[in-house]
Length: 389
Image 1 (cartoon, one colour):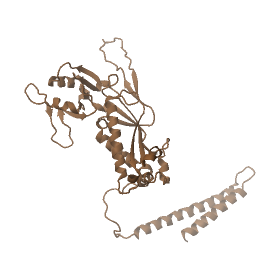
Image 2 (image 1 turned 45 degrees about the vertical axis):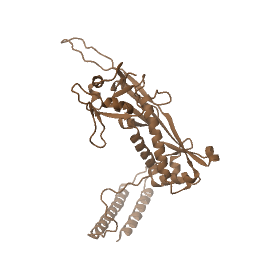
Image 3 (image 1 turned 135 degrees about the horizontal axis):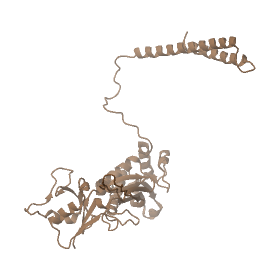
Image 4 (image 1 turned 30 degrees about the vertical axis):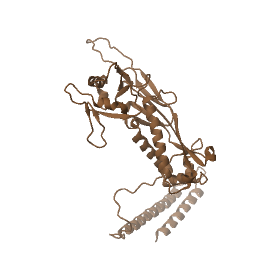
């Protein structure tokens, strides 16, 4: 008997058992002893048929396994490693291609895949691969993106800070315990809007030979990175992030020089920073101050500057890495652990088109926007040396 026939037989037996149960219940809703024995036999028959069906199914699976060929022919190219994961949503190739096609068609050919990334204000969220590459540009151009701690936020982000810590105290045997209070404060990461707009001619837009994608990514990435780095270093917190060098929310001023800088001043700056922070500390110096810093010598006449002899490694000053920025102030040098500078990215970046604004000039504008904030959550983690004029 085949599996199909057994299944049909079991189904018939089950329907018969249900009909028997419904028709043989007494007024009290139960079966008599004789009917109960009959129904039990019917249940046993159904159970036996189920076991036989399971047995035949296992037999079929085993036959199929044993009948598989020992060696199967290679029908594709050899591949080592994991199969590439299929990208979906904003990370998919379809979304990226649809975004580029929408650019070139004045957003007249908007594919359904773009609906996954429609921004609330009418723009289109940057495809995931574009956004990642834009982050790469920001990190390459913006030293604070490398040194700080980026956080992706969906709303106002609260960071708890221990304002006071419990202290240990010696007491006599049987003496009274001394209790101290541990208090906490909060720092809020908000979201300040940063945008960059560029114009391209209609000829370039419709010319497939022009690599519009790379042009937009490079221009937007550099512009956003420069504005971010300036704000992360010098921002006053009003409509923009709060910078490292800000007088009221940045690092702690270790000392202020009234004369030309000396090697001892750099040594004092290093040890103004608490020992735990010195493990990962580095300098941030304006590019124009490098000539002066590189000429500093110790008491033995040796330069305290140590140039890097390995590609990708920063130069060192008294053993600590040196990062330069054109946006660092000319009258200050920072030394500290910049991982305590938190960068809050609110969501993804988005594109918008500005065709009507430049229609008379035969040009098309594109706008990229992001919302970001930055704050130094522990001022003592960064020490500032103020230079003389």
